[in-house]
Image 1 (cartoon, rainbow over the protein chains, first blue to last red):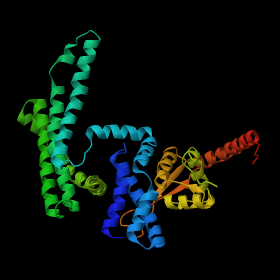
Image 2: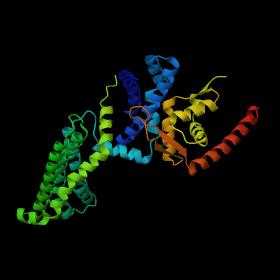
Image 3: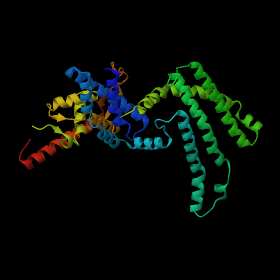
Image 4: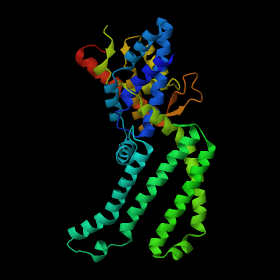
Length: 250
Length: 114
């Protein structure tokens, strides 16, 4: 099968899968399975017709109407998949976002979510119950947590993608020295976030330092190792999802 | 005889899949081949539509699937091998009983007993 035929079959599959309201991990699974199927049909037709272009057309015809298949995929979702999709609509990556744009958007959404849960909901509830609660209204650590979360997610999220891409050579050549550099930066960021949180809590640099050393220091060193492990496990599927999502369908 | 497709198949596809898997585990293309063979060439299934039905069965716990170990030269595209679970066997049994009752009743009404 030449590259052009393979792309034709991929487009047929992606036209059905991309609009489906399912999470990205399920999309990756469906794509692989449908691609295996449509490739199998193509091989049958190629054996029968002897012509690659005609076999590809027959395979796409036999595969069926992509829009109808999308509707059927949507109708076949379990409750867990519907919920996962909703979460992903709010927090997930959208093609063709860059890593920087996505992590920035994610950090803003995490800020809004945590702020709503820790500040807006308690104040609203106390107002609805007609008992303005000074504690609910007080400006305290709850206002700082969403800011810290937002400030941490952006650089750490961005560094995760840099580590992943350097590990698998996505967008730039594979480079373990770059993985190590980004990992060191990741450790530094984790440590800095911990120190900043402790300092704000204790309202003193020195007390903040005393609070986090040595345990948070150890956690900071372990964090990039865990990140590399996560990238090792999830990275290939994430990259496949990105490649498929960027496919031009027309 | 006209091919059997579309609305006539709706509602029966899952039972047909379970019945096919009762003969042994299979991937999607093999399930389709078995259905077309059993249907003596009169079944017209849109092949992509098989998979939503398989996913529904899997979500219901009536089939389970594992990825094959090797893509056999299909450039990264592996197949999932489906097999019937105990729950699926029970559903197949009750589906067969319901179908026999359905055919008996309709046959009596239409004057065309099975």
